[in-house]
Amino acid sequence: MAQDLRTFLEQIRSGAPEEYEVVDREIDPKFEITALTENLEAARRRPVLELRGVKGTDFTVVTNVFAKRSRLAFALGTDVKGAAAEFDRRGRNPVPPEEVGAGPVKEVVETGDAVDLLRLPQIHHHATDAGPYITGAMAVTRDPETGDLNASFNRLMIKGPRKTGIHLTLAKHHWEFYRKAERRGEALPIALVLGLHPLWALGTLHVGAADEDELSVIGGLLQEPLEVVRGETVDIPVPARAEIVIEGEIPPGVREPEGPFSEFTGYSLGERMREVVEVKAVTRRKDALFHDINVAHADHMVLSTIPMEANLLKAVRAAVPSTRAVRIPAPFTAYLSIEKRIEGQSMNALLAAFGSELYLKRVVVVDHDVDVFNDFRVQWAIGTRCQPHRDLLIIPNARGSDLDPSSEPDGFTSKVGVDATAKPTLAEFAIRNQIPPEVMERVRPEDFLGGSGG
Ligand code: MN
Image (cartoon, rainbow, N blue to C red):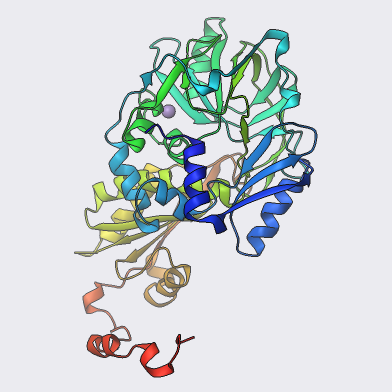
């Protein structure tokens, strides 16, 4: 069965109703949606939010869909700890998209002057944002020379009824395609897809070469072809079961102010001159849901880590085959666990991690008995297995993220590796507290405390 956002929302609604909240009362898209999410997170709740009363628009907003790792793991048919490995496994078997004649995304077709982006929800996420932003769009373009397709997330600042600003990440694939088009004096056609099944979103974030087509990676993750239809005004296939598709082009030689915008780092980043999208058409379902990703909150952070972890797992395993797990717990930070078979492998793991991912600034490697999903345990390992004079690796004068506000200038940074493995090996290190396993097995709280054991 074709999987789309609605089939996924229905699975959550029926399978985990406590994780799905329908809000009928009026809510202001200016900061109130973000405030609701933030206050829910403070109360340790991350439900999908279906907001039917968003002021100034007829569209229902869906947000926070990706805010729990367990929901993404469910979409991958696995559990929280297995998500990165399963993403890697499925991503290795791409399935090309399949063109179908028609799809719900064509129920309404608006072109030319009929297009009005100001009818969409005008969501301001944070106080210093330059304007309303569309944050959940999968942007699809073609390499103007080879025709290869590329998809990625790009933030879109709504600038008028038929214009948005766009942030093309420096030196990445869309940026490269646009540079090629611009050198020929041509515009780069683009399709912006809203209403993404979690596996569409995860596939969009797949880390690969420019000629690796994310739409086929999505098919691999779905284990069935993504059904696509042709754009109305652009030669780009778009998912037939999307909620909304915005079609347009990025004209050559045009730059306008974009930003500031509050980013995943937790900081608002300054205005720069950036490219724009001139919108030619909008196609959508009749009762289209407007899918927002709540920037810099769990919705954004949880989604983006799984594909990065999968890439890291592959790279570190190439250097240290007995790598057990990786996790990205915070911006620019990774935890690795390895089963160290011989001295020195912990340093090789650190070097592989830094070599594979430009963004990493701080990497901690621990032994396989430490659960990288347990922050206390990782800190415990640093506290009890690491000697700073011996076990810290400082790399000066490297490239990092230009979104790191502590780097200067933009993205010029040092990096630190922390070897928190037991030396020389875990087997020869101090013995951990242990309770005889047969006693652990025998002493069940319910037998001692009665009732529920609570
Ligand atoms: Mn790509």
